[in-house]
Amino acid sequence: MLTELVKRCPALPPNSKLLVLGGGFSGQHIASVARGLGAVVLCSRRKLESPGADVLFDSTTQRIPSPEDLKEVTHLISCIPPATNGDDPVIPLLGKEFEKMPLQWVGYLSTTGVYGDCQGEWVTEKKQPSPQQNRSKRRLACEKAWQKLDIPLQILRLPGIYGPGRSALESIRAGKSKMVDKPGQVFSRIHIDDIAGATMHLINLAAKGVRPNIINVTDNKPTSNIKVLEYAASLLGHSLPPVESFEVAAKQMSAMALSFWEENRRVSNQLLCKELGYSLMHPDYQSGLQDCLIQLQATSSEIIGAKVLNSQHQTFQE
Ligand SMILES: NC(=O)c1ccc[n+]([C@@H]2O[C@H](COP(=O)([O-])OP(=O)(O)OC[C@H]3O[C@@H](n4cnc5c(N)ncnc54)[C@H](OP(=O)(O)O)[C@@H]3O)[C@@H](O)[C@H]2O)c1
Image 1 (cartoon, rainbow, N blue to C red):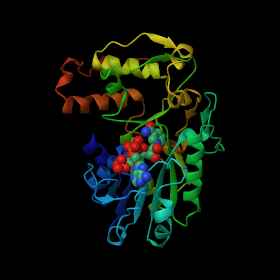
Image 2 (cartoon, rainbow, N blue to C red):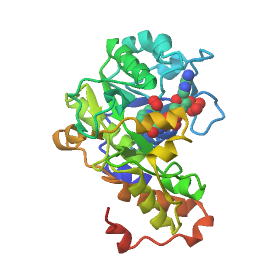
Image 3 (cartoon, protein in one colour):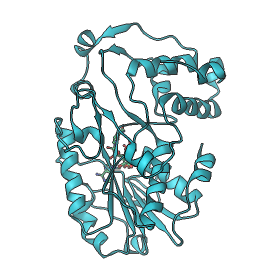
């Protein structure tokens, strides 16, 4: 919940102006929280009529924010994925400009895909990236391009992002969820509240001189997709399709979907949560999905059949 999240976040340094490049799912949430904390915020999208768009940025048409927009920007975060040719969409157009700006902190949202397959082991920021998928190789190249700039950069590596409007609840309601059983396979995930909350925490720490280069932003509980779907279905009071073995399901998966199942890792948040003291708003998928349900109930009248959250859900066991 935005108001609760804002209350938990530290204030940004006085006179902060935050530019969010790529105001999609995560970007808009980061922008809302920073605004709630009293900062001046500009959020870019590729079309001005898109929700939350304050300024235009589109690398394909080379539309960039004006000098007036960039004036006095103190904090910047890019939430824009690599272009299909592998280039970072932002750096060729704005990288040199950033080096001239009075930036106190720059965030780049990357992915934990850069670690590659870890055969289900825990992985920390100390592990050398070893991307196997082409998209993860492109991502690592973008990380390196950002690191070459002379700016106070911090790379946030994210696993699967979910939150209100984009979670297992929506896939179940749309009848699109598949119960795929691959023994030993887990996925890490992060709720958008914690992407925004961690961003504010890291900005605050950077102001105190603490700014590790790379941070995993992930919850405490890597889990199989089946467990997440079972829990989401229990919240909604829906039934689920029968479980299929991975070998059977894989025959109908797209190449993209299949590539996610080829890698297995448990991403550690020890640096963020233990060493840097960030307290997760949603430490696990149960807490995160409960929040998604509350927000779905608030925005939807179709959900009348859903169970009301109660202690049974709080104690749902894996
Ligand atoms: N989704 C996941 O599970 C996941 C997991 C790990 C990491 N990530 C990465 O984390 C970041 C944020 O993820 P998200 O899911 O919040 O992203 P998202 O909702 O897809 O938003 C991406 C943003 O980038 C903008 N964008 C894309 N291409 C652009 C271009 N060529 N020029 C200018 N703007 C461009 C989009 O513009 P419009 O607003 O105009 O569409 C949008 O605002 C992304 O880099 C994503 O790849 C995502």
